[in-house]
Length: 262
Image (cartoon, rainbow, N blue to C red):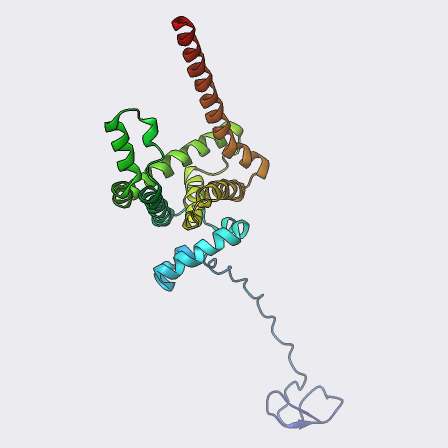
């Protein structure tokens, strides 16, 4: 038995042409066609890196987590790193980490100077120059690094990022603007944490920072690692060649002077 869709009266099967109770059509009407479900646009992207969430998770937590990601998961970090949004955020991170590295390096140098003595004093040849070099290596130099270290970091960041971006332009690898390059250089300052290691910390930090710059430039500009490595290493090669040329010129001048004296 079926029910009439109009009066809900029982209707025998097979369904007749008219309902015996109300005379209406007992056949159920076809279900109306529903409009297709609208496709909702994707939601906003999730947080790129922990440093951009420091207002929510806290400054110290964001600093530690960002440093951990850069040092242990550089490919994933630079792949998730936003390439825009301003220079202030990466600059703040770089100043904090870079200042910490400079302060630690200056502390070790001052401690070494107070125990062993000046390593540059013998190069002076004059007492006043030896005293100045000792001042730089000692605790006065440490205080100067603590006070002005942030300024040195800012200057070094812009100069190094500018050189790298110029190399990318020359090599045809600058697919993003200067901000992307600056962000890579800024977050590569995570290697300043390695300066906490005495003796070998500076060498490890420099090499590790160059490796991070290669990885970061490749991910930020979407280029191959070979082109990114060329952009990072080319300025070093040019600088080494210039230094070698100056040494040869200096050695030649000394040889010529000694030849004239003899």
